[in-house]
Image (cartoon, rainbow, N blue to C red; front, top):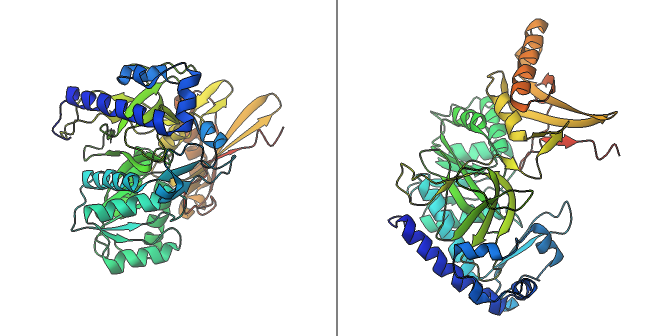
Amino acid sequence: MEFKSREEIIEYQNKKLRCCVDYASKNSRFFKDTLKKCNLKADDIKNIDDLQKLPFTTKNDLRDNYPFGLMAVPMEDIVRFHASSGTTGKSTVVYYTKNDLDTWSNLMARVLATTGLTKKDSMQIIYNYGFFTGGFGFHYGAERLGVSVIPTGSGNTKKQIEIMRDFGTTSFTSTPSYAIYLGETVEEMKIDTKKDLKLKIGVFGAEPWGEGMRQRIEELFNINAYDNYGISELCGPGVAVECKEKDGLHVWEDHFIMEVIDPKTGEVLGEGERGELVFTPLWKEAMPLFRYRTKDISTIYEEKCNCGLPFRKIERLHGRSDDMLIIRGVNVFPSQIEEVILKNSAFKGHYAIIVERKGPLDHLTIEIEVTKDLFTGNLKDLIQLKDKVEEDLKSVLLVKANVKLVEEGTIPRSQGKAQRVIDKRNLEG
C-alpha cells in the first residue's frame, strides 16, 4: 500500500467498505437494526460519500449492548476479549477473531517499523497486561516485526530501570506521564542514559501529550519519542503513528476510513478544520463498526508527508471533547495548559488542574511542581515565576488561572494514565 496513489487508496476503501457493509448486514444484529431504523439497504452504501447516510456509533451503543450485542460471529470463533474499566458506567467490550488478532498484529508491526524499530531491537512493554489493549497490542506487534519483547508490565519503577540496563533494552512503551516519572527515577538512581542504557526509541500514547512533554522525555532518556494513536473500541493502539518527521500521525487508511465532524452538530468538516475524529474500520470480523465517534479532537492533514507514506495524517490530539473544561464560558483543554507549563525549564511535567465553583463563578487553580532547590530558594523568585506563568496561561486560555507552586513530589504519580483534572464542581452540587 505504501506505493499506492491517493486515488487508488480511495478506490480500495470503497471496495472494502462495500464488503464490510454486506458482511455486517448479514451477520450483525446491531447493524441490521441500524439499517432498518434508517430505512436503508446494504446496497445503498456504495462508497465513502454514502457513509453519511449511516448514523454515528457511540460508546453508549456499546454499553447498551453489553456484553455481546455487537458480536457478528458465533461465540466459538471469539479468541480474545478486551474491555474498558467501566469507571463511568458499564464497560465497553471488544471481541476478536483469530483473523482480527492477525490484522491487529500487522497494524502494530507497521506502527513500530514506522518509528525505526527492526529485528535488531528489543522493546520493554510497560503497559498493564489485562483487559487494557495497550500491553497486548505492542506485544504482538513487536513479535510480528521480529523485535525482542520484554513484557515487564506496569509498576515497580526501579526494577523497570534495572531491567533496561541489564537487558540492554533499545526501546520502550508506556504512557508519557509515566515515562517522565521513569526518567526522574533514572536521575535519582544516578544512571547515565548515554553510558548505562542503550535506549534509542520510545513509543508513547494512551493520553494526550504535547511537544513540551516530548522534549522532556527525549532529554531524560536521550531517545527519539514518538506518538501513537488508538482507541479500544477500534482495536486498541495501531490506528495511527508518527513517522520520523514528527509532524502528525499517519492513519492506516487501507484499514480505517476517517472523518472529522463538528462535535456539537455532527456535520462533516472540511480540510484543515478541527473537530472530533470518527473512524470506520474496514477489517473487523467479530465486531464491525461504522462511523464510531471517538471524542478525540484533531485535524486531518491533506498534504503528502516528506517521509513518502501515502496515508494522510492527523494532528496530535488537541484533547477530547469530554475532557474540555468550560470556565466562565471559555473552552479550555488540559493540553493547552500543559504546553504553557512545559515551556518553562523550572517545571518537570507534574501538575494538577483543579476546578471549583465559588458563588456563581468557576475558579481554575493549577498546582505545578518545582524543584526542591527552587521551592526552598528565594521567595521573590518564586513569586516572579508564579506571576509569569499566570500571565502566559491567561494569554493562551483567555481566562485567569490561579497558579500554586508546590514542592517536588507533591503531585501523585501514576503507573498508567495520569489524572490531571480534578473537577470539584459536581461534588459541590
